Every structure is written in structure tokens, then in C-alpha cells.
Image 1 (cartoon, rainbow, N blue to C red):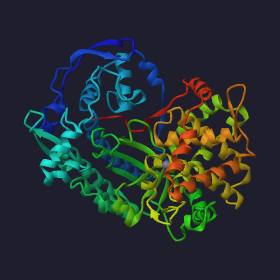
Image 2 (cartoon, helix red, strand yellow):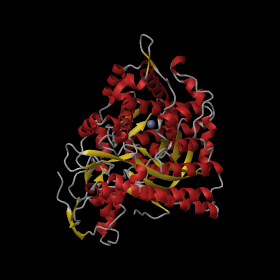
Image 3 (cartoon, rainbow, N blue to C red):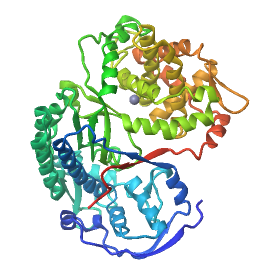
Image 4 (cartoon, helix red, strand yellow):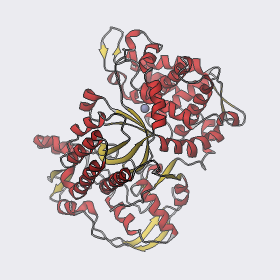
Length: 573
Ligand SMILES: [Zn+2]
């Protein structure tokens, strides 16, 4: 239970914002109530803020021409419009509160404002999305649905109006209601390109402006197609153009792609944007070993049938710096890698693009993983963990999602979809496979002279240091489940040992064989689609040892994530 929060007396004035569409269609979504009220804020806001380390993420403009800098400024402006939309999707009232605090000099209000920005809402992602200001719980429907609407009501409605199913469940519509009563109300689906038109039109204009300034015809073409997509909600053509870019110097994520924040139906997508600048040096290094991917697949410790040839396939990959982010990429946990788009039609035709955000990865390593390693590992090994090791592990993780069996074959030889055969534990299994086969691959690259032998310990130390970061979040979701299992397995087999000091040391001699045997186990589970085997395996290893939890509890002073400060100021309209 929480102690009562400190009380802040502020008069909040509602300004008329660009809610025109919403106020016509659903008054509830804007929140008409007066904000001239006392704000109750959680008492430990300062400690919560302390868990997000502010990190400068500058645009390195030294090597850029004035024209390129102008183009980036246009892209930044475009990205800001997606932030304007994002807040309205996630927490429209939180946005009003954020804006009302703009002029405040009261340090407590300045802190509140910063925490609102980090979360992009009044709901704390470190605290199960409970409110950190006020007492109103997060509405499941966020800004996507009429308040109070339940998923059962949507299902019932669609049963009665089957012709509206597609637009009701569309990832790019918001729902509003006509009529006040919950039962018998009419749902209206409004396409994003209409609902958010006042932001999307200027965003599209900025993208076209940036296209005019670009020296790269492929990128300019993508920007123009993406501008069109914003105004039609049809992203297919522009996604294809995006995947066809070849080693672009500048790149841009700019779309409603992810549906994690739709807590009602899990279908409505949030807008997210990031300006990307290719990190030439790291991209070049990655290409050097990317050409061995097919050989690694051939070397996996499973029968030939379960490692279908990868020769002749290519996956676009870029190591980039992200000097500006907005929307779902700008708030909440800061991604260090991404794999986009999510449209299965695009996957089938072109695949997807894997992106590694070097500046964010460095920040995570320097401010979270290395400080954690100092608490959790003996000094000599903590010192071996590095940003380079973490980057390589992350790259191989992403590559190895694509390695291993393509299908499962059960005992009678039937070909099965792996995900369906394995069932709910599949996500955890697949994340573990990517981790462990990834580490197997790094050893393979070392053995084949692609990566230096003396770096192997650095890779292992970085991998285990990264485990501690994930384990702090518990084993509730797939990555936590995977890394809990991996860590417990290494403990059981002596590749990782708990010392009397409460720290954990690696046995570098044992690591390679343990990684190989675990990789074999996980690949076999996928290859056989053996649900019972996978479930029993994860059940055995999914409990956090109490003494490990005790050691992790001592790391509270280490941040959980970074709060990026860009060269371009924070603004939302
Ligand atoms: Zn993964």
C-alpha cells in the first residue's frame, strides 16, 4: 500500500487543443472536467525519476552538409507531429496535464512533467501502469475506444454488424460511439487518416520537403510514398520502398506499427518515429560476418532437415544512431534494436529490416549493464563486459531468430507450424533460442577467424551482464522467461557460479560446451514441436533463486533505463 502522496495545488487551465475531430465524435475522450484541482502525486516520484538516467543523444552534425542538416530538421519536425498524435492515442488527459505544467517553475511540478514525458502518460510503466498522479486508473481503451467499452461489447457489436468487422478491428481506426447508453450504442470507426488529419497533413508536407532536400533518390522516393501513406493509411508500397533502400546514409521509421499499447483488443497501432543516421563503421563490421550466416546455419548441432539452407537469402540490416525519436519509440523503455515492418504481406514478399540503434545500445550498456555488472560479477569479469560485446550479442540474437528449423516434424513425420505446435511457451523458447544460438554463432565466428579469439571472454561476460538487466524485470514476459531459464541452466551446470560474496562468476572453460548443449536442446524442441518437453523444460528453470533476487535487490541505485535528451527540444502540441 502506498503512503499518501504530496499534494500540489495548481490551477490547470484547459486550452483548446487540436481535438476537433474528437470533440465532434466523442466528448468523453477529451475529458471535459475541470482541472482546477489539487494534484496528488506519488510521494516517491524523485526515486522513480532516478531510475531513468538522463543521457545526451546529440546529432553529430560535424560531417553533415548544410542541406543534409536542413533535411534532418524537416524530418524532426515531421516526427513531432507523430508525438502529438501518440499522446492523444495513449492518454489525452495526460497530455493536457503535461501542457498545463509548461510554465511551472516549482521543482516538484518540473519533475512531474518530466515523468509524464518519460511514460507518455500518467501511468507508471515501472509500477504496472498504476497512476503516479491522480487516482484515476488507466482506461483499457486509452484514446482508441469510447471510455467504458469492453471487449465483449465489441464482439457482440461485430456479431450484430458483421459488415463492420474489418473497420472495427482495423489497426488504423479509432472507435467512437454515437448515443450515450452502453448497450445499443452505435460504434463508429474513424480511420486514422481522418481522425488525425490535422497532424498528418503537415507531417506529410514535411516528409515531402525532406524528400526535396535528399540527395538519395531511393530515400526521397520512400519519403514521398510514406507521405501518401499517412493520408490513406495504406503503408504497403512505402514499406516495400523502405526495404529496398540500399545502405542509406539517412533513414526514417515513421508509421503506426506496434499494437502493444492497445490494452483492450491488442489491434490498434500507435505512431512511432525515429530519425536514423547510418553508423558506417559498425555497419561495415557487421557486414563482414553477415556473409557467414548461411554457414552458421549449416553448422548448427541438429540434423540437416532441421537447418534448411540459408544460402542466397539476404536480410537488410543497419547499425544506426537515432538522434531523434517520438511516439512509441520516444516514450517508455528505449529500444536498442527493432525489426520492422510487422505486415506479414511485406514479410512474405521482401522480409523485414533489422535495425540496431548504436547510440541507445551504448547508453544502455554504459548506464545500466556495466554498473549492474559491477554489483553482480567479480571485478575482473565485470570489467570484461563491453558495449562491443553487447552489440555483437544483440546482432547475433536478431540474426538467429531466422536460423534453426523452419518447421517442426512430429514423431510420425508430419510437418507442423512450430509456434502452433509449441503453444504459449513458444515466445520464451524462441527468445532463448535466439540468445543461445546467437552465442553459439559468436564462438563459430571466432573459431573461423572472423572475430578475434581473445574477444570470446568479452562476448560471454557481456552476455551474462545483459542477463542481469533482463532478470531485474522478472520472468513474466518472453525475454525474462528465456534469460531466467538460460541463467539457471548455466548455474546448474557450473558455467556460472555464485560466490560467497553474492556475486556470480563465469567459468569461461565451461561456457562453450554448455552453450552448445543448450542450443541443441532448444533447437530440438522446435524441430520436434514437442510441447510437453518445452513446457517441462521451462517449468524446471523459470524460478528466480531467492539468493539471486537478494543480489539483484542491492542494485536499486542502478537505473532501469535511459531518458534521452536530444539536440532538438522536447515539444508536443
Ligand atoms: Zn528476440
